[in-house]
Picture (cartoon, rainbow, N blue to C red):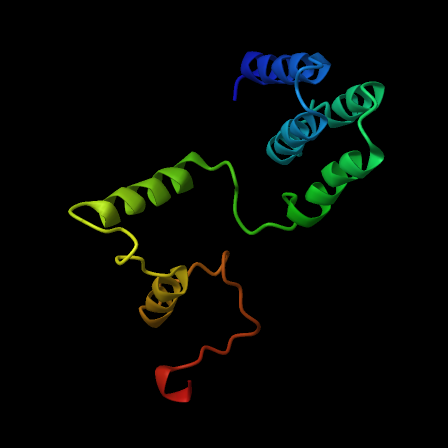
Length: 143
């Protein structure tokens, strides 16, 4: 993302935080999304946004949510990039491909575990998304 785009996003969020018509929880949600997306950006202003929330008198229980989301869903704990455009495009393509010619989408549902197991059997699981211990690979006969 270009520097100008990043700065524009930050400015829009600050404007929304200062808008008293926006609910406190919604401003916190904006900051959480910003924090997840720009957590590793060299010039992120997560602390500045948190200070704006405090000046707005947002309850501490909401402010703690920002720290919690970074701790439990931050870049160091998640296995894939939440904001990867290619991954989103792939999911969207699968969704629309699966819906073509379907009269009742509810009867056509296929759980994610089904796709994951098929990828496992075919040896197509990403080791980044599904890490394993050691060099041991289980064969189908040992399962």
